[in-house]
Image (cartoon, rainbow, N blue to C red; front, top):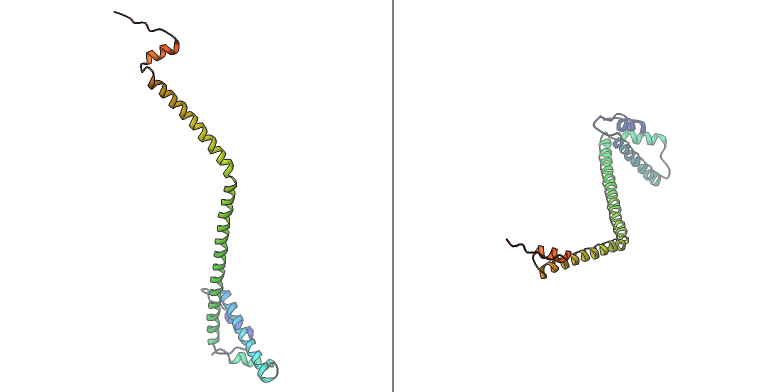
Length: 167
């Protein structure tokens, strides 16, 4: 059983002598958990004994702490850090989703503002293609309903008379 004489011993065990596979932040939070327990004990002592504990009583409290207090403090610290990390990730994801959603809405609003100019371009393009189609259809109808001989059509266009060559 370790004999702790004060907060420096607890700090040394939890923060300074941290194994390589542990994070010092975990030890620092665990140290805070032990100190929180001490403060709660001091409040309880003050309430029940009519005054704050003396320095000797505080040192005695540290000496009475078993080695298991460090393990419980680490477990509590792990749980608190895990909960904090999950809350932070959840808050970040919620904010990210909101920003994404707002970005999509802003883009939709911007594209709606561009509707009328784009509508005008589409309308002009449709009108031009309709005129082109009508011209091609008229040309096709002209050829279909008139003489189907290209030579006759060429002669009519050029006002030439067709000469028949007899052998």
